Image (cartoon, rainbow, N blue to C red; front, side):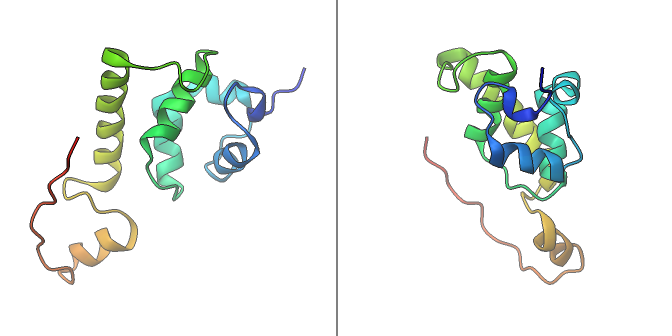
Length: 117
């Protein structure tokens, strides 16, 4: 039996390649890490944070269809995703080069962005 990441429900070749770039090479390793640690590794490797990709991963590791998530469960996954994203980007919501530029004082302070929802 193959231990390719793409054997996990909902995860295809592009996701598998992203996990490889993050240093996760097998489905077993991904399952052992769990969704949150694996997603954090993706973020550290340079992948952009997207809620849908996070909950697709969670559903896949549970053997469920990617869209089998709603209501309170989806709200809890959103909370977990927001924690992962905040840990990666820091409190100001900046990542990568923006975080570095902010640290050295190049980025001017911005007003908070209102989000609908």
